[in-house]
Amino acid sequence: MRNDGYVSHIPDLHGLAFRRFRGEEDIPALVAVHEGCREWDQIDEESPREHTPDLQELSAMYLHQGVNTPDMLIATLDDQVIGYAHVFWRWEEGNQIYVFLHLGWILPQWRGKGIGTTLLLWAQGRIRELAETEAPQYRWMFATNVSSTEKEARHLIDRAGYHASVTLSDMKLRTFPEQQRSDLPEGVEIRPALAEDYRALYQVEKDARIGTRSQEADMQDTPESEEDFQDWLKRNVYREAFDPELWRIAWYRDQPISIVLGEVNNGIGNVREVSTARAWKRKGIAYALLLETLHAFKNKGIAKVRIFTDAENKQGARTLYERAGFREVKQHLLCRKSFQ
View 1 (cartoon, helix red, strand yellow):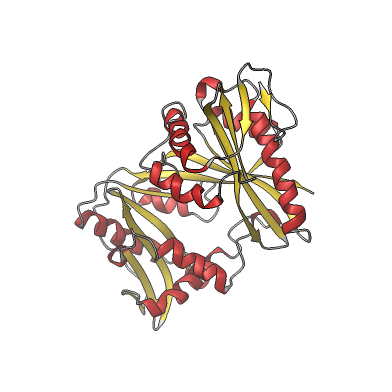
View 2: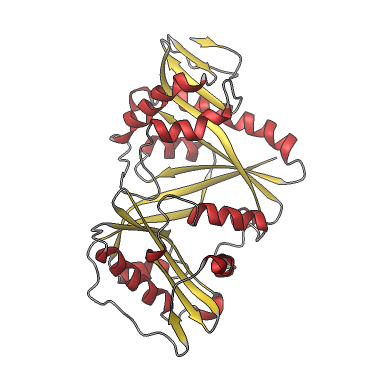
């Protein structure tokens, strides 16, 4: 075993070492780690929440971080990459919360030997350094994600004191509904949105989320801002899969009040967003839009459609999707732990 000073403790395993990212030469080995985890962790390649990244994706995500970035740690055994972790992403939430996301992967045959714990402790230590310099005035949260089929990762973070702040139900459309249309309230109509309407659509989504999550400070949505709007455009518009023919917008007069945003990725339909302004909820509008979106997928020859939502069904979204023909495949836990 070898410790180059990046971790305070290293498991007693002959040939084990930890090092930093070497850039492009490491990308194939990192892809191989994900590929090696796929079957064991039951990664669902059709899910909008997870898939196995390829060379192009990992290159786009990691190469700009630079060689020897202090925000990634790689585990090797006899100089072969067997796992890694990174802390590349962080963001501000409401109520003076700053969230630091850490993610990690280890080949199944090398789990249960303390390597995951070492990577976790490294990530937490690096995040503490970042928090003290980047967000000293905030409350800080560790964050990580795990699915219901990633058993070892779930055990690791449970033991480390994390809690699931949000549990998402990953759902698959079993059959297309026979019903194609549903009645709308008087004065409400469905029509397309133009580019100049995008900010109004963003505001529908922001309004819909007010009060829909737990009032715990660590679970608040990001505040409305120009930067947040630009992020919304990147997520929904400035992407290769963007297809306005799969968007359905409900309007009351000149004001959008409900949105369903669909797209197709690798031949799989994905309902990215379903939001209704608070004043118009519980009126059947989202269901009507969803029906039209599903038949738009069908008319394009798309046979598989996915969606995910709050597993606890606090706002009734899961019931709505089940009514339209969706059924749960697995769950994804967005986990948090406070630190200071």
